[in-house]
Amino acid sequence: MSNFAAQLKSEIQRLSRKEIRSETASLRKSTTTYRAEIATLKRRIAVLEAALKKLGKTAPARPVESEDPTTLRWRASGFASLRKKIELSAGDMGKLLGVTGATIYAWEAGKSKPRASQLAAIARVRKLGKRAAAEMVAALQ
Image 1 (cartoon, rainbow, N blue to C red):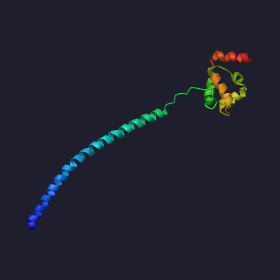
Image 2 (image 1 turned 135 degrees about the vertical axis):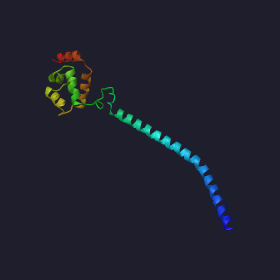
Image 3 (image 1 turned 30 degrees about the vertical axis):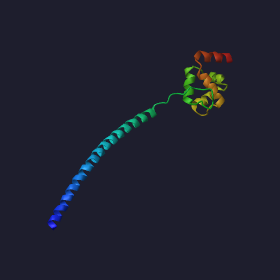
Image 4 (image 1 turned 90 degrees about the vertical axis):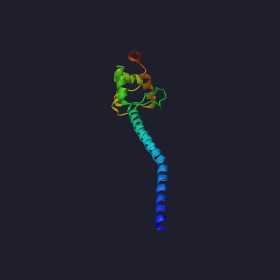
């Protein structure tokens, strides 16, 4: 009888393995599909992050300048290039803004910064061309 029990036991094991194999085959197939999809998504994320990083390095678009002194920004090099662009001396620029030429040099050197009221005046001068600035200086003299 032990031979019969051993054969019955081995047959039950064989059938149960066969059933388990058929049940897990669909799971394996779906697992493989999911892994492939995950790998594709990871590659896509890497590409998007690289694009985002590249966009972060580009200069942001300049906002529209307003007359509100709290939103005006200040850069000494930008002010120096403005003065050179409209071809004014430090003294003439000072007359337009109501300060001295030495103050203009201090601003350009970064030793000091203009006040809020002066930032508004700088914003108005920034909108002028060479001729208009020269006419305003002539009118002040």
